[in-house]
Image (cartoon, rainbow, N blue to C red; front, top):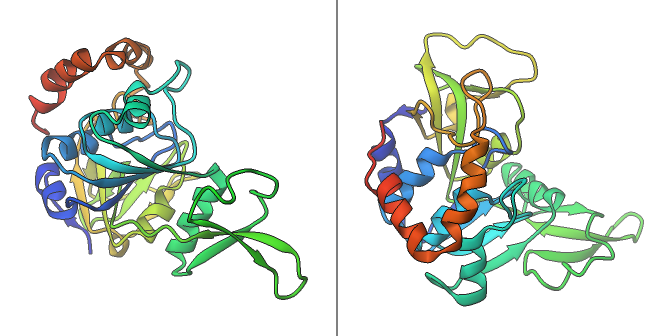
Length: 271
């Protein structure tokens, strides 16, 4: 059963140096506040996993949290590159960053295999691409029934998954709605999980096309209003487009980036 904890305590308990940490949320409900708390607690040598590394991982990588990245696309959506990610890969600043690149379908299938307690998933999607042979988590297999050559991707089973949602009840059941990604699969695939939520409610009201995460699948829930900003939480606040545009200039320069993080993340305490 999920325990309700404040964000600082939850991160201290669940995220450790050297962990494989998945932070999911597809354009929406991105767990920025939790990522900032990981940065404040100076976690190091993390393997970060995310379908779409955007600003949240640019910040974590630039602050030295990560030694490896597993991903399927990386950029500042609608704006351009992630300059801290590029600096780490191209120049090893603030530290070298190993990468394991997949397609959206490939990484999703890795999560599904992990959530299903299977060692790998099988797909056709990488046939003809140069990703085969570049990653130790991609291999070819022969179908035992047809002889067809297929692609296997190794199960993704993070140490901890972190996601954001709109609501949880006081027993730790969680509901999220709107655009969703692989939050459910990431939570079910992981050994531990933290869900930050906009609010605790007495009872969850079923909504169309919502995702329900039961309390038995979650380690901790942390009430964190505004926890997805500058991304958005449907029904609570809109995407801060100006922030994404402004981040391009902030993140291009190392000193400007460090100053901004010092003023806006390291100096802040979670609500």
